[in-house]
Amino acid sequence: MTKKTYKATYSPFRSFTRDEWSKLEEHPMFPFPISEIDLNKLKGLNEPLTFEEIEEIYIPLVRLLQIHITHYRNLHNERDEFFNNSSYRVPYIIGIAGSVAAGKSTTARVLQKLLSLTPGNLNVELVTTDGFLYSNAELTRRGIFNRKGFPESYDAKQLIAFLSAAKSGRQELTAPVYSHLYYDVMPDERQEIEYPDILIVEGINVLQVPRGSESKRKKRVFVSDFFDFSIYVDASQKDLRQWFVERFLTLQKTAFLNPESYFHQYAELSKEQSMEFANQVWDTINLPNLEQNILPTRFRADLILEKGECHFVRGVRIRKI
Image 1 (cartoon, helix red, strand yellow):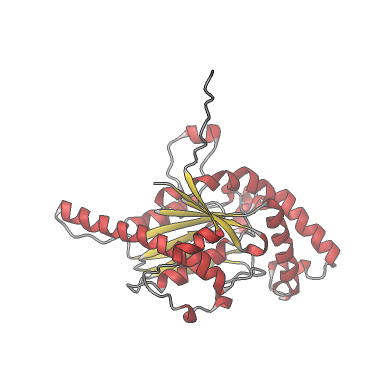
Image 2: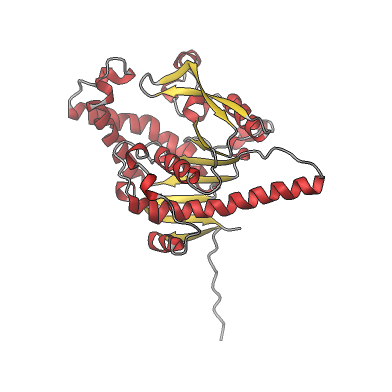
């Protein structure tokens, strides 16, 4: 009789349901001062954020990050001892990627706030890659204004130079500032960053690498090479489209009413026209960028937050080590 053989399915990730993940917080290292958190300052437009989400999803994530950061600091000290010298510890860098409308910015702000509340009075800074977009004038000159958000629309050299300076131990850093009101980089504004212990870098493009022949052309340094930990905020394409359209409709009734807004030109559209326009933007810009450039980077992350309806996390995948 022939014995049946079975192939085991292996994955580089360990998966947790929301319930399993939330139970990791049952034995906290110290009580988080939840009362100090103002949810309104953290949540994005049309993104519900609750204390339950903080406690069940983000606090266990911060505990995990604390383990990594502690080992990172211990390694620095041990290396100093090995080389018999004392050196500045460079910041621990966390990258956060994901689609437009996925809620990356909310995740970044929540982690910045929670990590700043952990013992040690850590200086936690947040930088978005929007500031490293080429200006609208430069995008127009290059003929790629309609591809804003695609990899080629970013000044990758400037972003890599910034991260290289951070990882070189430079104590004072500056980053360009992007205005969502004017839909452009502000030429006379800079974000000042001093003595960061932790640097969070958030953007749709942060885990991307060149594909095919482009990657063979020359050796390159990638943004993700500077990350000590990376997170991908994931959601179904159906939900992402819905969240993008809903956000556009809300902005039309709020920010777009400002005459100085770049999008003021769309403030008077009817609801039907607005939905048609938002879906067109999604289909011609955001969806192709997601499918071609963003989604393929999902499994390069160390941790994946899998969102369900209403932006609430339904599962977590963590890379095995």
